[in-house]
Amino acid sequence: MLPTVGLKSEAQLALQSLRRARDRLVGQRTAPIDQLRASLPERGIVVPQGRRRLEPRLEEVSAMEQPSLGPRARLLVEGMRAQWRGLDRRILAFDDGFAAQARADEAARLPTTIPGIGPPNATALVAAAGRAEAFGRGRDLAAWLGLVPRQATTGGRPKLLGISKRGDGYLRKMLVHGARAALRVLSGTDTALGRWLRGLLRRAHRNTVVVALAARLARVAGAALRSGRGFEVGAAAAP
Image (cartoon, rainbow, N blue to C red; front, top):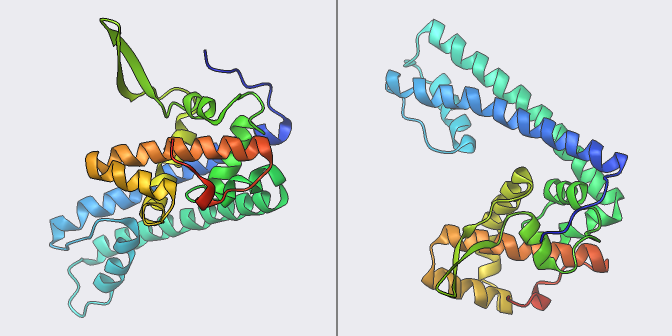
């Protein structure tokens, strides 16, 4: 049975509200980007995948001596770009606030020593789980976040299925994104964790390895919160 986390403090509730507000802004930013990506190819303008690669391409289109966009289409694109940039500034303001919180709060500062868990993820983790006192071991935190496999038993033989996806879906998603970003660096280290990741990459799909790493990092984060000690990559043994 999964542990029950106690009542949250006012500070934890405030952090969770800020996280939800930031997540809504990210969703709002996606809408004009998707609209641009859908409308520009209709006018013969090829746009690359990725938000960060789209902006330079729009600059190139605006600088063309013989623009592919008519006056009205150009106004529409500029309006969506302005909306996009405004949302970028608001999201950045949230991120700056989370970074300041992580520097000021000892509990939030500990998870930031873990690769793939920056200030946004660290503050979200502390807002959801506090000091992880409710979890007897790191695996309990990973299970609470829905990052461990479900099990089914047939004929007395257990079989591992996909992850359970219980708990805080937003935090689970953020930890998976962080693990994806950290996978290349961690898998290249000459440590038990690096060797474990390289072994997984040889026999499993990369997305499966990303989720497994997210679960591992959640376990390490739980241990760091409970012990009050930061993360050392060389000391992180594989499960």
